[in-house]
Image (cartoon, rainbow, N blue to C red; front, side, top):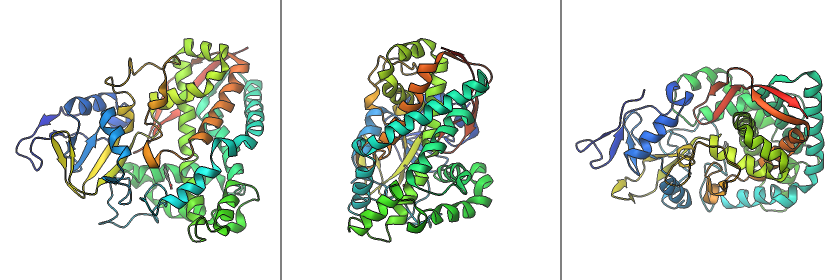
Length: 408
Ligand code: OVV
């Protein structure tokens, strides 16, 4: 167990509670619930002595800080590393790791491309792709590992095509995301294990962002078309494409893994979803709240920021526990329950404010397509073996989800 929080009156930040645990240690990554509760109970802002950073884990403070981009900047990086004092491992993202005004033009371009109305042309195709995937899977049997068979297979089938990258090398997408999301944490064993491949993976991803390799009509080509119209500059275009390839694959894989895990663990909710298939989107958002595929991101204080009775001094990193906020009993009734009768729409699993996930409608469309195909074909779903976690410094992920289904 992690050490219990202690209140310090003599440390560098008098009046602030201190936690000595490691949010990126394997014990917490395996099951972060107890650690999150300790942080929430310790106070609205807690000092994490291990990394000399601050933390917020209650819904109200996380939500308020995510809104306040003026006090809590992203341009110094949203990982532990501070870009003002350490060189970033890759050129910073124009969306994630930037602030207004630089952030705004790239954001506007992507918001337009990924808006619900812009995705309507994908809906029929993605529904058909999900139906084929589930039909093929059920034809092979009723027991399978849902991580490779569904959670990975579906996004990898539809999303790279939608961006317009070639087939060759797509096996690099998940390992690239895996390293990128580990790299937001400390330089621990998880980062160390991926470091040898990181350069090659990044080079491959960067090569897919060039105009010549992107298929007509895809999101990538549309980003370059926005550059032709002067909405972003030509040197920004490849980095905006890179954001799609960075943030659009692993996140949806783990989001789909979460919703499959949830419906297999709460069978009455699966029954409900089958009776009311329009609940597919609610089910996905509730799973994003319940599991928080993206667990944490940092911000950096731009000035001495007062939070309650405490002050976060300028230049310091603050770790925002999205996952903990999404299960804060101050905000949610019975937060550990996956429940389709609640309104999960205030969750911060996609973040909040100006950086809130620009791809969330893409993720919802993928989830809706897959859940609908399953609901039409599968009467019941149960966990059929050990559920194995996959540890990542930022993402809550499954390594294996053995399921047994009864076809309808
Ligand atoms: C939300 C997110 C995660 C990872 C990478 C990026 C964004 C990006 O913009 O590169």
